[in-house]
Image 1 (cartoon, rainbow over the protein chains, first blue to last red):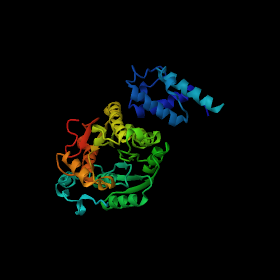
Image 2: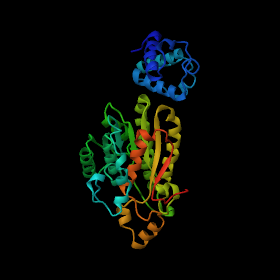
Image 3: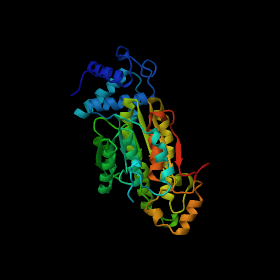
Image 4: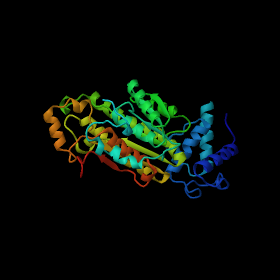
Amino acid sequence: MAQSREEVVETMKDVLSSELGVDAGKVTADARFKEDLDADSLDLVEVVLALEEKFGIEIPDDEIAGVKTVGEAADLVIAKQNAAAS
Amino acid sequence: MTTRPPDEGEGPPGRVEAGATSGRGLEGRGLEGRTALVTGASGAIGRACAVALAGEGARVVVAYGSDEQGAQETAGLVKAAGAEAVLAQADLADPAAARQLLSAAGVAGVDVLVNNAGITRDGLLLRMRDQDFTDVLELNLVAAFRCTREAIRGMLRRRWGRVVSISSVVGLLGNPGQANYAASKAGLIGFTMSVAREVAQRGITVNVVAPGYVPSKLTDAMSEEAKQATLSAIPCGRLGTPEDIAAAVRFLASEDASYITGQVLAVDGGMAMGA
């Protein structure tokens, strides 16, 4: 079942604070992974794996490349969920 | 050949000076609460590794392909060493095997992975079939890649892990008749160094142990001449024991080795030194 963008961002807060050990307060839709959350490439892979598990989706590598912010990642999750539902 | 844990005495001649015995002072319970997965644990080297890690207190997933009796024997020795043993059968030629083995480890995940399973399909290059080459690569290298990929997810989460892959002196020196085997064993080294760099900042070390000649059906079948020639190439003047190899694996899996990663530790009586 697809969730709202806010719900997905909320879930990502949990994932990011547990995977990256960042302060949940810093995880906003506008937060940039590299600059604001201090995430390196391996951190991003870990986040993607966690999101895939959490939401039961698959995110291909080439689609991850363009993602810079938490909000963009949430949009990608929602798009994948909708694609899986249709 | 039956193998015994270091403290049961009675081994091949030369065992008294072997690493297993001299290393006893290092033995502790440093891996208490951790889970180790050893592939090819029904064989002599895999068994010695499983027993050595059990001696450190690790719960051991005894992974095997077809030799159930050998695996049972290993599990018995793991238990005798005071640790839990989990038997797990999987054909590593099957891409799904790595996941099966990780499931067998349970929710605790795998903290120490020993990529030990291996096969040989010896033959001179001109007579080597594609299948002989790809089968050996698939089992010795690709399966190790898959097991490492699956195991490392949990290690990343826990910020602690040890991957030790068993290569061979043949991967460093080459050996006529083993182009496929040598390629797979050298491949493990490049693989290890790359993964070591990827995960070094996460408390995970990735290393290679490269055994020299250890008595096996293969060396038993060698002619007296061939045996002498082999021995003369080994500065220590004797073949290795499975326990010699396991002692190195136990060290690399320990907390003491946390600053050692991407390395190739040859346990070969000096055979490949400088290579």
